[in-house]
Image 1: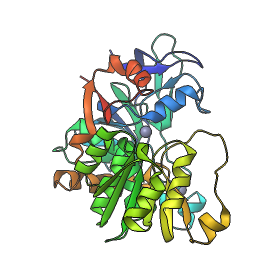
Image 2 (image 1 turned 135 degrees about the horizontal axis):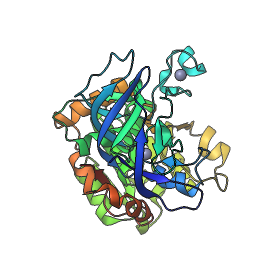
Image 3 (image 1 turned 30 degrees about the vertical axis):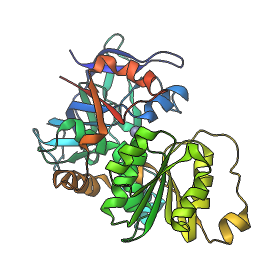
Image 4 (image 1 turned 120 degrees about the vertical axis):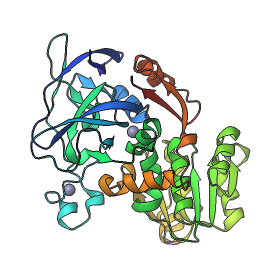
Length: 361
Ligand SMILES: [Zn+2]
Ligand SMILES: [Zn+2]
């Protein structure tokens, strides 16, 4: 029996149910999923009533597994290959960004046709973010099946699919941190900690972690932060500026708009403030154009998923992890069974630890 976590309709609780798959088509790959991380974006999809995707929805977008079968024309992977399932796959030639030679800003990701059904009634499922990886099997475009070394355990490899790449990619590729520069990271959840790891790999001289939870700051320190700022103990902008007189790069890895405002105000002259992660829509930013932006010449950037080119960047990150330059192991707080995913999604409201990963058997 093949199982999947299905979000059936607005307001419904996601549930594990039986699914069926059509065979992979042209340039499509069937993956036996081994592990899939519990990422906040799936909760966002649930709370945003599908986030514009047609129901029913097959959840899970941080998966890794082994190629089981390939469709016509697939040349990049073969059965038996360990792959990370990417939700980004730049089109290469049809969107504006790719046409101007900037696939990191591609707006037209390649995708497989929808191939997965609910066993109960045959309804076609929409795989969330083109993945649908809370399932024993997934069918994805070959560009989304990114080969990584077998030596990297699946429960670590899957983190490259979303959370880790989003954070590390923000510092490595979206707004590349230069060697020897100073960095502030606001929010030390999984994505913020990955920004810290990316900044360290990029050679940042100072990495200041900002959070209100002492345990997270301790973890941040262990993962590469050179300084920590407890934002519960007074204005974090003042504290960061006291340490550095402003940073070259500030990353907001929290959903509150105050994170980006603080990031802007932490920047030194000509610094860059980067928004990482999915914010809620809400109040406008409280910034003064002259005092906060033009005067100090601060640039604001937004990244989607770290602006990765998965086929290049995931193998790079995987090798860096195997070489001991990244610490993916400490990002896996606990592993759970597929049956526990609906509860784990609920638990994201009061997160503990870094990442929960569903391991499939
Ligand atoms: Zn494109
Ligand atoms: Zn995600």
